[in-house]
Image (cartoon, rainbow, N blue to C red):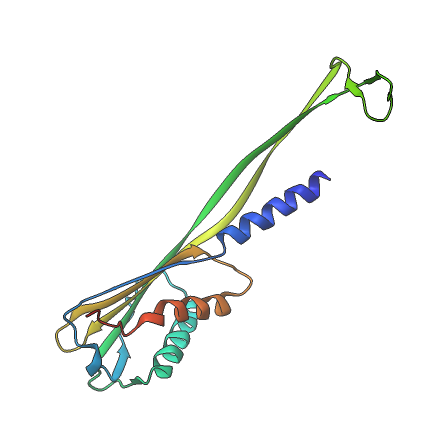
Length: 189
């Protein structure tokens, strides 16, 4: 029974951490209506992002931007896209415990045995406890969109959450879709 309760607790913990927090910000003076083409900014050599992750990010971003009508153009693009990110290992330690008493019931009254069970004085207590640890990785992804002519940042999207190592490409596609959902931003009147 203990094994199942630990498993259920771990599943609930993973489900509560499965979502990514996605935010964006933009320059309100930037003219997003003129943006038709884009290209990727060069990735620094010292970047800690592995090649496969970078390919998944670029694939997902290209798919989202092309669905919005933008086209990739290495020659004279309107915007440049820079990607930054990282991940860190975290450990969650949870202590659990419970206590129960061994009761002897005494029967009193006219309905003894069925309705009038009274606990006898407690004779024995048992306390069980344990410590569970969960290791997981938290990742952060930052997409910067820079005006190619002015070299100024006009839009930034960030996503932070628990990484699911069993499906990195699918998770990356979902995160990018949610991140670029509001690009180009709609100016409030």
